[in-house]
Image 1 (tube, rainbow, N blue to C red):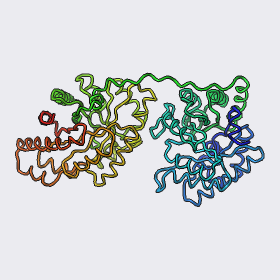
Image 2: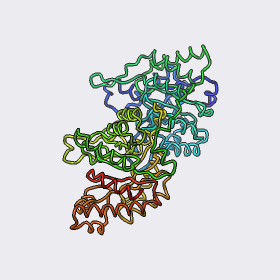
Image 3: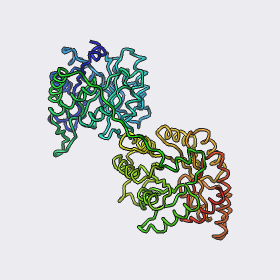
Image 4: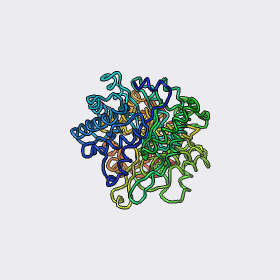
Length: 585
């Protein structure tokens, strides 16, 4: 029967379970890569396919989830995997799906190009049903879908994302965003979720989704057997087959037309699921999922957002956090800046990789005790998604709703034996994650800013990255300081290219030594030689007056291309910053 006709009957299509974890559980296979068994032990893979089919599944996946390696090996794995699956399924008339896992971005070819090449190999073996699963992002899916339908208009394409219990992928993307975006693709036939989460959490996710966006497409849900634990040197899933089956039946009752299992689901899980689905179909018709109503988003508390959106110019001032636990001078500096007319104070997150007081904790203290809008920097360094979400929820509770998201400076070389830099994602992924939190427990959205380096040698690349950041949720940018005509020219180009707000960077140079240091030891800063020369031989007082003159001129030159200024305080000289603000306001 044509798969679309099968799904039109209204009963769920039951897939197999997890090839990889089942194969690894067999004697002497824990460390083996199961896809290579297509070549080395095809009878063992065929036996696993048969075990799932005998358990009652109606569709199996080729053992081709990971075909990384050279092209010849990938081709041989795919050809053998197709042959084994088709031969095994033929006698029971089961559907065979070409299985594709996520593609690494590290190679020269992008995910879309790799998917298209793999698809052609499967089509050449006669497969017309495809599942692309365990995806953390939808990168390359549009290209794959269009290519597949051009080559084989009758092909059936199922796209499945791997989301954690909080509804977020490891790339920081929201399940709801990916679901809606993929469901809107004409060439995709089914969309859903698999892996990472157990059946309870995927059931809760489905119940909270608006399934009307499917517009006739099928919803697919294939959870893990539960959550893994380590026994000895083996990873095992301790979920019970009866519990899994009952939850899978609930998932089908909530609107899933395609169900199955992922990691840890062995044939007994599928057998129990088959029985549970049959019992549930006798009891009642499937019920559509009801999306939970979200609390209304609150926007009015963010004074910085309100002022920017009103078209008035703003001034944000950066003040370095203390390196010890004495916050007195820092807080007094914030008060001076507030009284001088600053709209926000930005606080760096361990600048140049050196430990300082936490930017988010200081932001909460500023907001609570001084009433000025803080703009803490959040780096991608040293926090995974769990820690980042916990921190953001805390900021929101404290009324802090503006953040500057940057990748962060690496740990200095001499410290790397004791302190390791941990980068779980880049700033663009972090922006997507923060922007998606309104779907996952956040009632007030963050206004997200990014950094823009106007002094980069390849500024066109910086603009491309900035446009990606806007696509991921950036509302505006704080630029590196402008000192040169080229930086000002780049700022004008940024104004023409970008949609978001721009705060132009101003860094007052306070000495000849300071100018040399900026030019040679601070990434993203470029001071022209004629400016450096003007500081030669001048006193501290004369240098400060020169800093005032140059900063005011630069700030005024920026006005046509910016929505405000981003002033950086050198050596906590807040009085100098206050004088600059008085001149430019």
